[in-house]
Length: 293
Image (cartoon, rainbow, N blue to C red; front, side, top):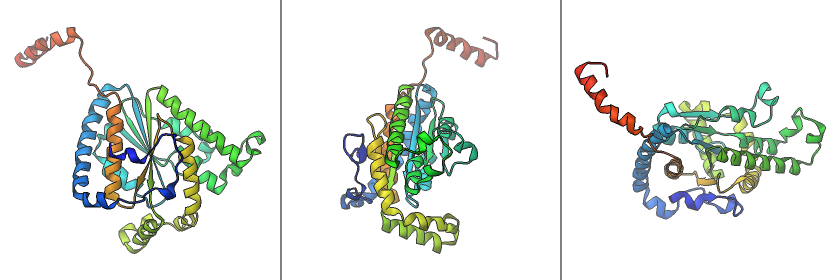
């Protein structure tokens, strides 16, 4: 799989500043080939999903995280759009509401888990609770016991990292796989895409003044992402930090990751028992002759 070089499994720390945000010169020279390979991967994904759905022994959760304008929505549309919607759900975890805040932060996530045989795509996820919450100190606004809120900030989030690792291991041990993808966009490319949203009437609705407030914290988010990836990556639930400045390249890499994940999942079509197979000829004759078997 070509995306292996962007994989973090907990064996080494993540440093976003040392990682590429775009395709290298070699990849740019192979752009046409990689776009064709993406199309091939989408076809293979559809074939694997069909067997994965019929098999029904594992569930797959694909987590998409990124800063604004990194291409999460278009990734869902262009890479995941070729899957059978009968076996896929997409969840966008936005700012939690009153009911959600009255529960633990994984409550709403657990409700969104797919049945085995299905795929859930989390466009943002429970990782918001260690990203946005940490950057903005939102934990201070929680209605929780003093024994929780009086902890030092670093200890509070250290425990959340542990909880997330254990939650993902729990899912793995209950026949789910979690694949986490961080779309790594540069500050310059984010600026370019924000300007495009302002200057293109059909994209005006995508822009918000809040985007600029969050952009001012770009470096802070980068630092927190480093910590989050480092602390929550594992062999069973790895992170992939994908260059996102060129959408065609990011889509190629994500198609490689999802194809590989489905290939690793159980994807065998159920087999009929010998007795049931023996009856197929009887059913065929009955259909052809218009009789009851």
